[in-house]
Length: 133
Image 1 (cartoon, one colour):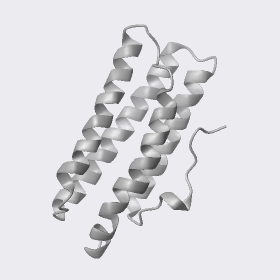
Image 2 (tube, rainbow, N blue to C red):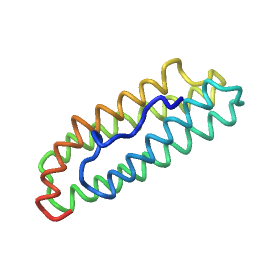
Image 3 (cartoon, rainbow, N blue to C red):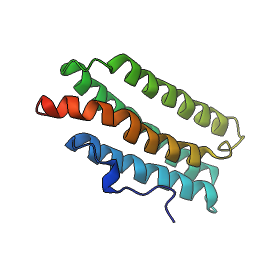
C-alpha cells in the first residue's frame, strides 16, 4: 500500500509542478516499498538515489520558474528545498555507512512532501498563474 497518494488537493494548477509532484509521490512510495520489503540495501540505495534525482530536478525547475517571474518569496522557498536536500544527503550517508535508512525516513518524506505542496507551494501558485505559467 502506498505511503502517500496523489489527489486533486495537491494540485497547484502549475502543469510542470503538478506532474513533477506526482513523480515525487511515486518515488517516495518506491523508497518505502524498498525499505520495508525484502529488498537489499542496494535496492534501497537505488530508490533513494532516484528520489534524490527527481527531487533535485524538480527543485531546479521550480526555482528557475520562480526566479524568472520574480516571485518575492523565492529565498524562503529555496531555503525549504535546501533543508530537504540536506536530509536526503543524510539518509544517503547513513546507507553508505552501512547503517541503513534511518527509521521513519519514508514517513518523514511523505509528510514533508504533503506539507510542502499544500502549505508552501500553494503560496507561489497564484503568483505564477497570474503571470501565465
